[in-house]
Image 1 (tube, rainbow over the protein chains, first blue to last red):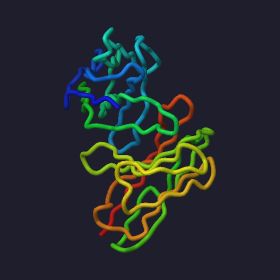
Image 2: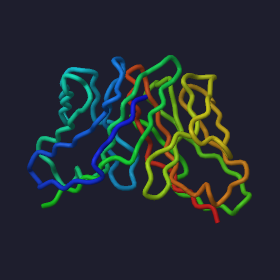
Image 3: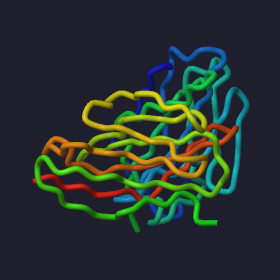
Image 4: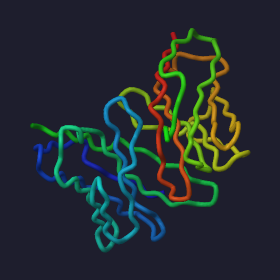
Length: 112
Length: 111
């Protein structure tokens, strides 16, 4: 699976949009981009995933560049409860192989 | 619908003791996983079970064994605990959509 690069940390003001970048320049055509987050001491939480089209759900939006070498997770109106470590993972589901590789992620701190 | 549950929440062991961590999911998922997370680190996969009746090693399987008891339950056993196994252990499950759903974790300390 392709490797991802994320900034180690970022701050965001409460109520503003948080834009989290992820670089995955070696992504293959059949690899998806997944985002998870981990709030302190809790299990990771799935946020969103996409292949090439932009995706939106109740939690966030995912923007993938046309060449698929990078993506941005957008939290539209960050709240204090969004403070967490965010993981960008590139993943290709193979038969009987669903392993995710979690890197260091981006520590996002939302400030009042 | 409880999702993924893990027991116990906390455990302290002495070196050489054994224990089994229990995990259950009620989402009818085929695949289940065990991860460990050391302080300040990302998650590392210990073992996984792609479907009932199968198990495979992940990145860090040494010192652990697993049992996929049935479709709902996936247990992790430490036969002879070592201080290096002090960690937080997370169980997860996934269905056809491949996104994984995690339990609350078991915090294990080995002295």
